[in-house]
Amino acid sequence: MISVTILNEAEQELWETVEYYEDKCPGLGFDFEQEVKSSVELIQRFPQRWALRDAGTRRYLIHRFPYIVVYVYYQEHIWVIALAHCKRKPEYWSNWLKMVG
Image (cartoon, rainbow, N blue to C red; front, side, top):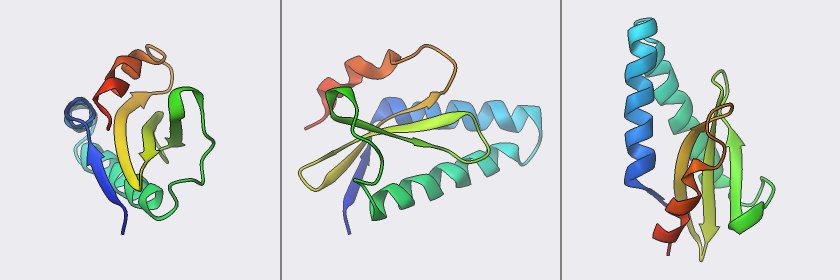
């Protein structure tokens, strides 16, 4: 199976968002975490399924939540760059691409 690396910044975004949703409604943070896990597993199975964008990134829209998984598929490896909110700070994560490879 294709290996996945989640950048520290993306990991931090995950746990901050889990905490945010858990504060809103108990259990919702867990639901978000599970949706992210399912999203990454689907990306792992079909890494080239989503459109190639600028700088070689691809984006997967997480179900139920307004977030995308921004990733790069490079040399048979998936790099999760960000778990970005769809409406906030577009492409703030672009500098993080330097950490890939």
